[in-house]
Image (tube, rainbow, N blue to C red; front, top):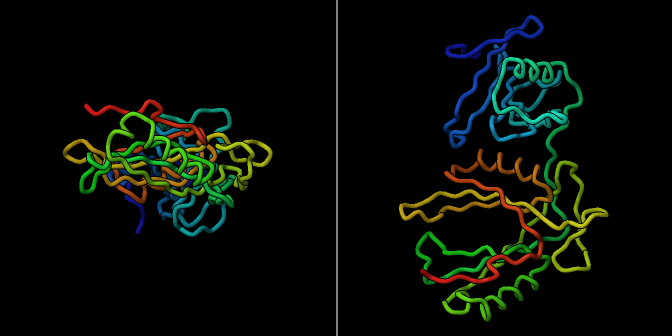
Length: 270
């Protein structure tokens, strides 16, 4: 069955007609996507508008002259120094088609590769204000070792206002650290607490993705979170994947300085 042209625009490249449209996709939390398709659906491209994504998704059977899986395959788009467009024009659509049809050597968005060691996320919880499917939690930080996270937790519970005054508990979540665009592994072993080496450089910050819904009380529930990523671009790609998998009303990308403490002054109940 061919692609429908109803309510959609057409464009011609190398004497072949393609259909394209820009639409809010309900199944992806009403995000706006550009879709381009050949009449026989052999070429199908998608690009998320307004998120400054640096990649394009191929969903068809052919891409740059080669057969593909027909499933979602992401490729870095060569924007160079240009900013990804916030508004889709016919010129950009034709540019994408030319790249997908006659281009060569598109670089796949690398499969994330974990490091040999882990980082540890510390979360404290006010147990009295938690209920059923909601936890009143405080994100304290991400640390190099479980032992370091435990020491910080015990310090908070003994000395920091609010945490010492109310029945609070803590949990430590082991997190893998994934490489970024280059796909190189990031190895541990830094001498200073709160740091991991990344090749010859020092990994001082990581990124995580969070998604959640809000209940009738306005509290965050059904929270999903990612592993850790060594650069922002890789984290953004993970956010796109998570949005395909989970239906959540709210999303955010958080940056952490490894070993840095949050909520240093504690809290006071109102």
